Image (cartoon, rainbow, N blue to C red; front, top):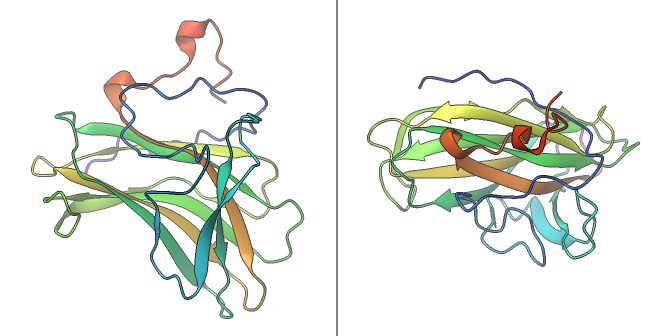
Length: 201
């Protein structure tokens, strides 16, 4: 799969974001009131819950907390959503805003991965995969990561995976996710039309 350049766009959120356009393909990526439409791949070792902490400081919204509670080290916990109907566009931007608890003792990282599929149920994978740069436990505050990927010609669906990768054995690792997005590059809201470049660094 051709990657359009996995360029890290990481900022510490300092105010309200630009919002999501009508072309947003993710369902419940802002976690306003719940974590519906997201599935934890291995519920025995982790879970996803709603939290009132919001990346944009919106008191009417919130975030998802994905907690990796495996007693082992080097454990990958996946939380997924299958997006069953891609538009005809082949180039997409995807990512999220993540926050790992400041001062956490357990080390690990967060990232978003995309796979493309030949069927609406996300059971027959096609092509390769792309992953955003990781946010690690050394980062503080909210951090936004986005990157791009090109869907193979036969792809009709996509699956986003929110990773919680815990390096250490023992203690839990909780990661906040907010503003999870998947949109065609053609309609990506870069913020330039507002007269500033605050969405970029």
